[in-house]
Structure formats: structure tokens, C-alpha cells
Image (cartoon, rainbow, N blue to C red):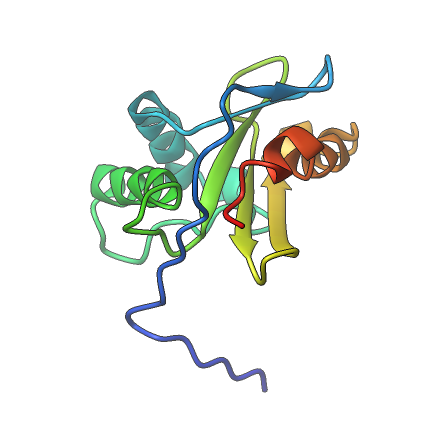
Length: 147
């Protein structure tokens, strides 16, 4: 039996200043989340097959889909502000289509960052997550973290 303890009010983490521009390696592009991402998050949340692998934390049972999607995107944006977000600072992964994945960064010390990432099931096994993870720790981004 697996047992997990999760706070009803998880701590919020502020990453600091966002990167000054989108990060790209020529194939994958990381960008800041935007309100225009809410519809795509809601679409992912409405289809269990698109949530497979728990790359984003789907809506809780009974919660309004758009309310959940809006709160999720707002949380990713808030991670870059003094308010903070429960996932830290979020970056959206774009490739052939927008919002195929996500990278979340949480500073763990002045010199270390915890990175989590995932991509939608139909975009897996093409190296997108690996590229996004590398781009997420790009020196351009790392220099924007708080000292």
C-alpha cells in the first residue's frame, strides 16, 4: 500500500526574475506561460489520455475544468513573482505546436535549482523533454535567478 501526505495548502515558491526572452535550441522553445494557455490546459485536463504520465496534475474530481486550468496557469505565472507559485516558476515547451510540455524550476539554494518537466503523451520519444530540460538550465536563464 502506498501512502502519501500532501498539504492542503502547499508552500509557494518564488523563483525570481523571469528570463528576459524565450529560450530556444532551434527545435524546442521555452517561453513564459500566458493566459492564452488556459484553453489548451483545459483541453488536456478534459481528456485522461492526454494526462497520461502525470506531466501536469489534472483537475481534482468535481472541480470546474476552466477554473482548474486558470488556477494552474496563474500558479505558473505567479512563480515568477514575489507571490510565488506551488510549482515554482513555470516555462511552457513549444515545438511543432504550442504547449507540448512544461518545465518547472524551484530554487533550492543560491546555486541549485530543482527542475521538473514533462511533455504531452503524443510528443514523447522525440527528445523534447531532454531538450527542454537542457534549455531550462541554460546559462542565460540561470543568470536570471536570484542570488
